[in-house]
Image (cartoon, rainbow, N blue to C red; front, side, top):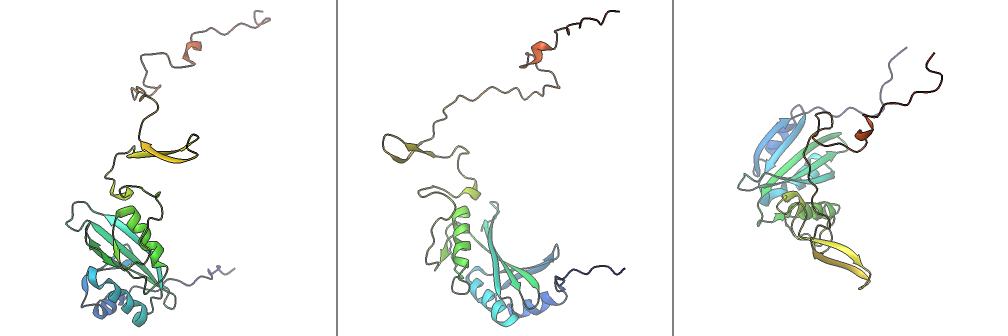
Length: 217
């Protein structure tokens, strides 16, 4: 019996792709590498739209699948914006990266792919990266009025404010964070390591089981 062959086509080989695409975007290329089976191009921030347009129009990478952010606080330009492209005709993917800091905007690519608007909003919301030219750069995941950017992790774990529904005002209100309960005292001991107090339920351990009638014969 012959082995079943999956109907989905195998992803195209990476052979020769780095050389071909590096030459096409050489004017804007900082670094190219193949890592974990993926081809990655790091390019100049101000040229990101030119790079992606070239890959789309001249090399058939038609779809913008994802835009993601990454934070490297030790770097001068701490943020990376990562673009993931798919070629439907070649069944091949490439990744393009550029870097920026807290103040310097990245050119938008909404003129190339309309779906980039929502993806750029997510990176802006989570990391604070600004996309110059995005026509609707609003928060998309956090609440209105939220201060800070969650993936920077530069705010207290409890947050600055909390929100609740006020029966008196009949609306959602924001208030300074107040922990409604004192922090409990934990000794970080496992019950199997032996605590110096009686755990709930352990008081029954010393009780002798009652003998059933008829057991003594």
